[in-house]
Image 1 (cartoon, rainbow, N blue to C red):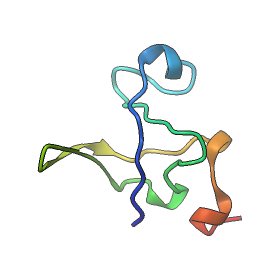
Image 2 (image 1 turned 45 degrees about the vertical axis):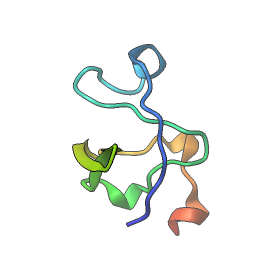
Image 3 (image 1 turned 90 degrees about the vertical axis):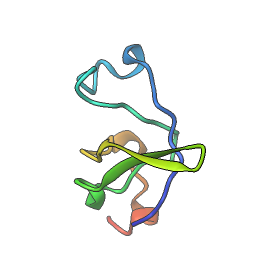
Image 4 (image 1 turned 30 degrees about the vertical axis):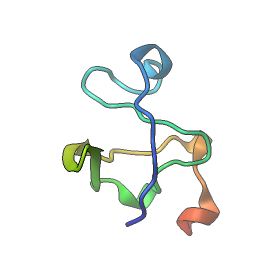
Length: 72
């Protein structure tokens, strides 16, 4: 699995694509999780402790990086 830095977005930013508060919306342009990572962990480090926040559900096609993820 690859690691990527993401920023948790507010409900106003993602309400047309995601279902807050059920889903967590994270985003950095051109730094999206790969589609093949659906079901993988969404975790966060606070201090020196890792926390599991959820699972990767899907990536928006708008910011999908085919070359980075090795998919067409």
